[in-house]
Image (cartoon, rainbow, N blue to C red; front, side, top):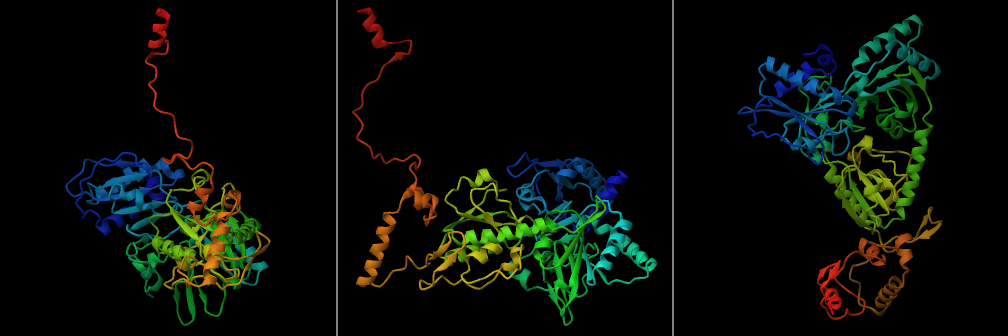
Length: 541
């Protein structure tokens, strides 16, 4: 085994986890799979035995060049400890997002668990256990400690150190270097370091369990192989455990404690890492906090987060635009994150209660070309993990919003208080959505610049047979019949995809022919184009 590969990819610890989990217990007839629709699955194995164990290695694009070497090193490590006959499959592509555990790709080879390498969102899995290797990105701990000391002098708040999971290995050295810097400068600032939640994840049995279970007081998250499944299921929650004096917060795989009397705004957030989706999740979730980012590549501080604040303002604009939509498409952006089916059903009920029409679409990774096939949808709701929920839809025909933004848009009377949630598990509720009443007052649309009346969910409910009710139904039917097709197509007056299709000039191939009756059937010419039979007869005469 190459020493660099074994250290960088934590091969011994991975092999220990696989042996401790006894993943060779299942008897499977392993076949050599070919490329699938969801990505390439490359096998690295010896001839299959009677009882082979199956697990998948998942690499991001930048680490894919080391996939064969890591698989070879892992096989050698397992064989040295009596774990021979294990088949290793490398997933070279993912169905949706590379930060999530790809249970779909792993199911193609009937894998028992997934080993995930690189950046991870730590979203709970549904069916398969997962083991995470975050990697070790280079970090100058002395330069980072000096930047932390500089920030402590400028702010009187407690410094909360958050970081990308690829820098978790350097946390001990960073703490030691910062304490030495404080001693040499005769200062003692208050600093709190977030901890890694865990590196092992077990599948959660239900969304209710995710919402109701609590952490045990004796659980440790320092890379142990025995991890509580409740802990793993709640990795991405923002507020997990409450006690008499403190409550535990977690976001993006890191966790920290704050006092019950304190707010997050009382902390100065010091982020170590790149300006990526994990950092955007931190900034948008804690948008009222003072945040600074330490760039580990450039070894310098960055205090400018204005571009992310612009994103927040644009999201509010999309919420206002979604309020005027009648036809909503629900984009399924994950098939492995626990609870995604619950939130989809909840969004369906929410849209139905608002008097709107919804369609559920499963298309893998969405892009402008795919969504252009559904022009009747005026807005899309993207259900995915927290770090990929913000989909840039500037090039799309219709805006794409998050489940939290859908709740703001389709819940009548709800106002945005400034909080922003990217994890859809925080929105899952058992409460039944109340339908919009027909007596609701008109609301003001900031997009149309006037008052509009939302459609009532009980429009199709059988009304009382009175002359007044009959007149109202007749008047509404006439107004719908006389609608201009352009208004239906371009002004959002279509109430369903059927209305949109009827307003189009071309509706595709149909068996109904509305033109004049065709002529009687005639016998055509016979022969070749160079000379038909009737032409030869005429020339002969």
